[in-house]
Structure formats: C-alpha cells, structure tokens
Image (cartoon, rainbow, N blue to C red):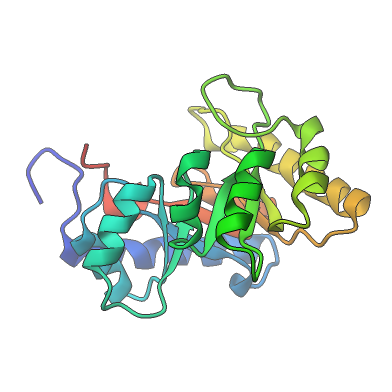
Length: 235
C-alpha cells in the first residue's frame, strides 16, 4: 500500500471483506434477521480487475459497476471466473440499454418507461430483473423517480421487465444514522406498492459503506459496499 493513501493491497482485500461480513452478521443479529436475507454487492467503480479477482478469491460473487463500458472491460479481463453476478448500480442511458441487458444480471437503476422498453427489446425472455431507483429526497443531482411516481412507472413497465423491488441513495450526511429515515421511507413505500400493484417486490437495495448496517436494520436485502473493502476510488 502506498504511504499516505487508502488504496488497499489485494492481499488485504480478504481481511477487509471478512470484516464487512462480520458487521453484516452483527447487524442481522440486532435486527433478528437471517444473514442469508442480505446480499453484499461489492461496488467496484474504478477498481482494477485484480482487486475484483482478489475479492472473488475471498468468496465474493456479486459485483456492482456504475458504468457499462468499465464493466465490459472488467468482464473481459475476468472471463475465467465462474458464478459471478454482475449488478449495474449506476445511471443507465437508454442508448446503452441493449449492451446493459446482455451484460448484467440485475439493473438497480430503472427510472424511465423508455428505458424499460429498450431493455425489454434486448432481453425479452425471461424479462430482465430490474429495481426502480427512487429519489426520496428530490435531489436535483441524482437520478431516480419521485416516490409518488413509482407506482405509475411500475404499472407501465410490469409486462416488459421483471420489477424486483426498489433502490435508493440517501442524501449525504455526517452521521450514518441520518440515513435511517430514508431507509424506513423506502421500506414503507415498497410495502404500499406491493399492496397497490399486487406484485411481490422483495428487494430493497439500500446502504453503502457509510450506512449499510443501518440499512440492514431497516430491511435492506442488498447493500452496495466499495470503500470498506477496496479503499478509496482510484480516480
């Protein structure tokens, strides 16, 4: 590791991954949840393929990328790895829908009817698993659907794609507990939408390095953790 940085040597990734898994187990214990109900997705934006390979060797199988092109490069470099589950956790433009549909296993950032239908044309059967990204705080700098528009979006796309649940990124805060209210809101929104649409929406993708334990205590089924395992982004 270079002095004065938080870049993690590949030899240390296994230890850091183990520490995160321990904290997930503790959060599940506090929430009286089965640890198998929480999936850890390692956010690998800007991380080299070697870091992903090190995490894979330590037992990780779920990896999340923000950009389609960066994911394609890593997939090519890591084609020898088996049982890898690729998540798209960044905003997806409609013009990249076809490529995303054939290179990811779950897309977390559905926020537009046109995007869903573009995905469906590229991945008609079985329908592509997707999560609706919800912009709970109405932040202009973030993508996502307003909470009161999610039901209409789901009804418009439910025949085209497989809507599995919701995703959110809460507003930044100094205290991880500040995210508690947003995670609670997403869970309650999911419950209302299940009742309104008749769909099972089991997945709640919420919580990152700063607040994933809080998210688990509020019902997260997927947490997206990067820095706690890999250190700071490299660019």
